[in-house]
Length: 443
Image 1 (cartoon, helix red, strand yellow):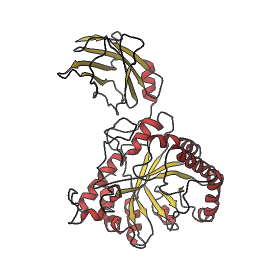
Image 2: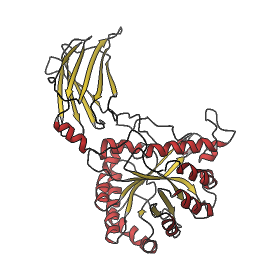
Image 3: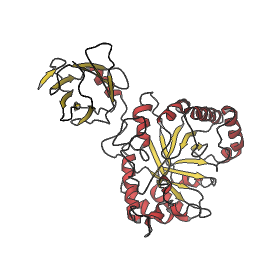
Image 4: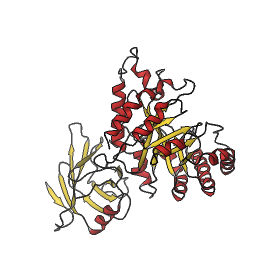
């Protein structure tokens, strides 16, 4: 084993990077990088680029990028690269390590032959420490604060709903169509964030986006004015976006809606994307709307469902992004956006998950909908039978995860107050006393 890098420093905080290479029996060449955080800070924005090139300057280099998930003090993370054709002739690895939000970087060279191990000790500079102390914490090591669970209500049809508000004082209540009762919610629980939405209308991506936004706001203006108890107003519900160009149109629509609502004294929640959407390049195209929303005290909203349990999909990657064990393709998809896009652009907008729960719609091969469908005995082969207690436990787990993320205001469990039975398989009205008790345990 060898060592190289910066000279030994009297500081107590540093990073260790170790590189190990070998050739297996098939002739394939592997290169393993291990990062160890021996500092006092969470490392949540590290970025590493390995540039592997031969001695011939005209030959192409092979690049690998690595963005480790949050690396707490005392923890390590590893990344392995495999080159099936074997090592390059007199190949060297140029390792570029940086904080992805800018301000610090280091370049390390490894020209040792295969079968070697190199270790670098990188003392924390004042510049690095300053950046880390200023960097916002996106995910805490443990849950903090009261419950972030709330409720999505399509109609205040049961006294159990207001009983839940009085007892649980939920983080969020989302109401659709029937909005007047939100004044009672604010009277009983002033700190509950209230969100209002009207049933969907024309959600086609066509025409002039700003003109469409003006027409949308003007159409609903009497409702906005009649419901001052609404803290944030949603626009569209689960817009269908096909690619970055359509997302750019929607971003322009949402930005204009935000500006118009602000002129009239109202705040907005932008986005309201369906679970498992958008894709990474589409989300990048939505950033102009988020920037405008931040300028006008708005928030970001989206939906998070999974099935057969809420845990399914956690740890899965979003196409085009490095896998993150704490994020997911369905639940915690937002962590990809905040960790790798919004933080980089300094657009850490408050977030509300305006719908969440179990939704069989993510399993199109099965004719299943809400959580109640998964409590039936005759489930398709391979799907686990669940109980009410199972669902409550999953909601408690989800709550604990949200309580680790300071930028998340809360989530709205779908659904209570079903008007016509359309959402019967999602209904949680009879669970509200149990939910209120569970939420009280976080106080």
